[in-house]
Amino acid sequence: MTELTLAISNIILNAAIQEASSKGYRPMSAVVLDASGHLVAMQRQDGASMFRVDIATGKAWAAVAMGVSSRALMKRAADNPNFFGALASTGQGKFIPQIGGVLIKDAEGKILGAVGASGGTGEEDEAICIHGIVTAGLKAE
Image 1 (cartoon, rainbow, N blue to C red):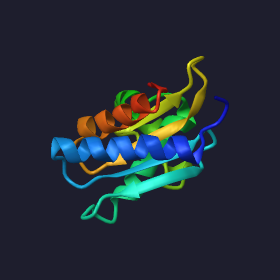
Image 2: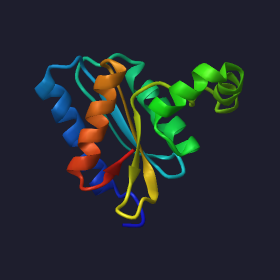
Image 3: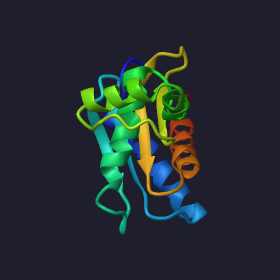
Image 4: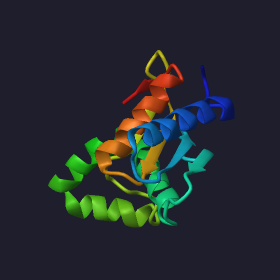
């Protein structure tokens, strides 16, 4: 696979949202971005607040922009807050280094994009992203 298609993105999102529902998490939003940070697909569960889509997008955008999970970025931000503040400013508010943004990779390890979620705890957000990616037969990082 050389690019992230709408069909694959929808598989990821459907699996992620179904996982959130089956676990009884609060209403979630999830997004898939391509390797250039452009929106491919988005889902917002009934009852998810107005911020969820933007936060999910920011987590995914941060991950794909830096080539690592937003969990790793959160850890880096703790050690270098000035730099990460500058990244958030440079990214015009799209850069959110919090748990819940996961890279989507193909079998060879090429970054295809990222999925981000918001609505639960960071761990819940991350877990549904990983579930969606794995369900689609891709690698999560």
